[in-house]
Image 1 (spheres, rainbow, N blue to C red):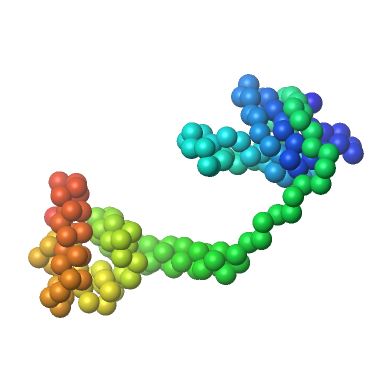
Image 2 (image 1 turned 180 degrees about the vertical axis):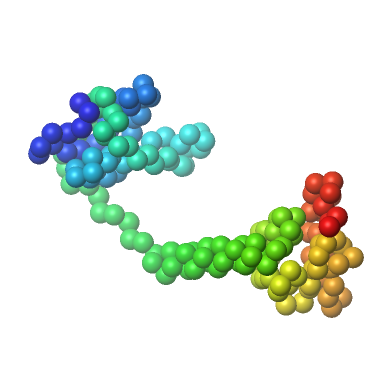
Length: 181
């Protein structure tokens, strides 16, 4: 069965097994099915092996040679969990800001090493931004090219000390030509 015929569908919660045209066997619980596009969404055991996680696979049934229904669910599926829209909006806004920051660095001609250092600092301290080719951390610390510890300036204190530690650790793991312009 390559795709369901007219009036055929997969019930949410059913367990199915699909054989792809590449000979791969996929098995899992139906999460969603769109008849028009012939797309099936399965929730499968995690490929990482962690018991509290699942993989979600989208399957185009046009590329499936066989589908077997292991366990058909006939009762009404449980209601969908509500989404925290404000949390999703915040995540989208943050991701957009991060991408714009990366784009700015590229357009400003910041070296790859400078971009990598910014990303490393940003993982620990979210309050960092670009000012031309300088990295500004917590509005207190400025790191200028070529992004070495001696180029890390700011008001003496815990912020400067912390950023210098991150910079030292980064330059110890950086490529051998790091900081050489």
